[in-house]
Image (cartoon, rainbow over all chains, first blue to last red; front, side, top):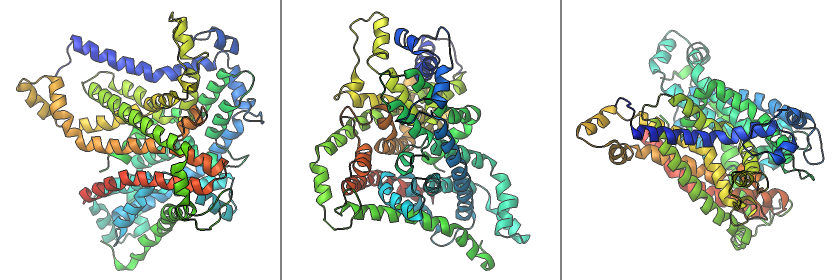
Amino acid sequence: MTPRFTWHRLLLWAVLLLFAAWFLAPLYVMVATSLKDMEQVRNGSLLSWPTNPTFASWAKAWSAACTGTDCGGLQPFFMNSVLMVVPAVAVSTTVGALNGYVLAKWRFRGSETMFALLLFGVFMPMQVVLLPMSQVLGWLGIASSIWGLIVVHVVAGIPSTTLFFRNYYVGLPDELVKAAMLDGAGFWRIFTRIVLPLSTPILVVTLIWQFTNIWNDFLYGVVFSGADSKPVTVGLNNLSNTSSSVKEYNVDMAAALIAALPTLFIYAVAGKYFVRGLTAGAVKG
Amino acid sequence: MTSPRISWLPKLVVAPSFVLGFLFIYGLIAWNGWLSVSASRLLPNYNFVGLAQYTALFDSERFHVALTNMAIFGLLFIGGAMAIGLLLAVLLDQKIRAEGVLRTIYLYPMAISFIVTGTAWKWMLNPGLGLEHLMQQWGFESFSFDWLINPDKAIYCVAIAGIWQSAGFVMALFLAGLRGIDDAIIKAAQVDGASLPRIYWRIVIPSLRPVFFSTLMVVSHLAIKSFDLVMALTAGGPGFATDLPATFMYAMAFSRGQIGLGAASATVMLATVAAIVVPYLYSELRTKR
């Protein structure tokens, strides 16, 4: 099976590169369009590189573009997303780690069944909780606020973070825990001294997974946020659907790139862990 | 391995999240079910009306459009993503030198929001300055591509953007499966004189069956939950030509003041997903023991 130069090797490469171009084209178009002025957007071609690139539409998308009647750009939405994503990721990951530790190393009667029941939360269509959840958030007094979004993201994220950690901890040898118990270590000591130091890979996978999901979420953002707690995905959608006399596609593309940058950056530096998270949900064990 | 002294501690640790989780999942599902048999419109009210909301739902033309779109979009999206993903996985499995780079390129769309994808494709597919304009500049003067604003064709645009976003994900799942196959099997078949395409078609792909099914599960439940992409690309339009059940539910529950109807459509979505996922989860958990 040593690769030789043959005609079907050539065909193979042609197909692979063609697909690479198809996947990259939208990103290229977004970047190119965002660096053009409207004059060039109208007269140039979709694929042409701007003759004199300008960051004017980036500046406008960030601080001056109109979303509905409000013209403050994407900046406030971006900040809302940051304020929402940091606590939501931290809490859901911590809880997931503890749950996974118990479900893998401290099983009790019924714990497996309860885990299976919790797992349905990974797959269920979230539409089914939207209406009652908005009532609950109202009762708690956190409807239309960033706190409400954080609570929803934490609760909705626990099934998958638990799944990640549990499946990882199942793979750690039970002897480690048994030996520590013989030495007199308790539940917390075993967790902090033995299990946690071995958890770096799954911790990174889960943090990235949760960050990407919560940052990219639109459904909860559009349903549960109020006027001043909308996340960046909702801001972007409002921005690109705001009808004005002239559709400023360059500003739309700059805004889309701004919204995509944090997750793209993480993908670029830690893509391996992101892919592991993607596959962990589907191919278990 | 639990010593009696601390046997309550692990239970105490998981109790809050199990209680919250079960309330969130099953409590709210039940509550939504309750709303779906109530007369709720703009505000929830709990006057029991039996299955009236479901009757109204299945009589609604808009919901029929949503279901038809679901079928079209689902078939194209699932079929397209699975076919392209499998093809790319098999090709990448041929000891390609730049495999890592190509894999990174194929998979990056999964890292960005469907809203970003929708915004980008809305610009590229717009009839005035997008793809149509480009093809005309390339000399195809009569080329016309107005699918995005054509009520009969717009759903295909959603499928194209959806496949673009998810094909790399399918590729990653299949590639992981292919890597699990013993090279010796392929070598043995080659010694027997079988050609490579034949080996893949007859031996390798059939042995991917479990991966195939779990991928199918994941992709079809992605399809049923599709919401963001439609909102960003077409907002359900033109009119409600690209409505899917998820956008129908959102429109009814949160902008049309038809809470009961929205809850009923959410229950229908839940039933569909459960029909696909529950047998899968059940078999996954059974085989693990």
